[in-house]
Length: 51
View 1: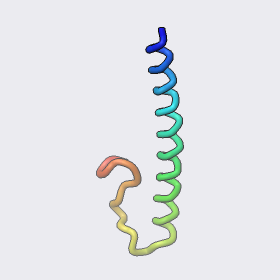
View 2 (view 1 turned 90 degrees about the vertical axis):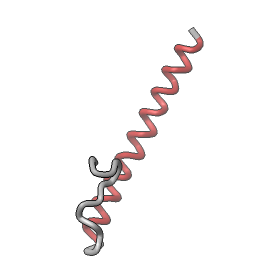
View 3 (view 1 turned 45 degrees about the vertical axis):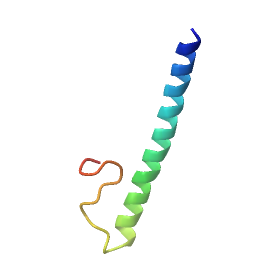
């Protein structure tokens, strides 16, 4: 039972942190594209070549 609680808490924390980091990365990526003309058009915010 204790392991289940630990796994659930870990999954919840991992999900919360990733959502926060990913949304911030996407916002910063958008800001850089708007404010820097030399920013590479094909650069991805989170995963190279994907997102």
